[in-house]
Image (cartoon, rainbow, N blue to C red; front, side, top):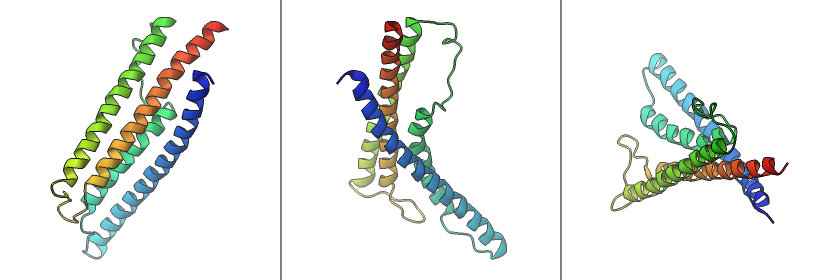
Length: 172
């Protein structure tokens, strides 16, 4: 089993996980819209807004953002600045592209690790909660960390794919 086979298998399972996370993000976004609409209708028609709407929407935003990072990367939907990469060809372009993927992997792994540290500080010595609805912050910190780790895995896979595709192109 060579490196390409391993990358393909990991990529397959990672894409299944990413699709699941994207469904969670879409569900969170739908809930956000429903809560905001219900809040506006309740405020203007019944003079009774939903208590804690801003907290709920803010916490759901964490789920939406961090569950979609890896999906956007898997679809190639992230913004790429091509000022330099359009002027570089061949091996230099492959090296720079893979280096950027690996730097992104490092950065988002670090961010995920710090998200776990932040989650721990939100659990110990006391559980920190939101001010109005007393929703614990720790699960949302876990979602942030998990989303960063999955995104870093996707970046790592893309970095290796860039290198392996260049090797395959040079053999042909």
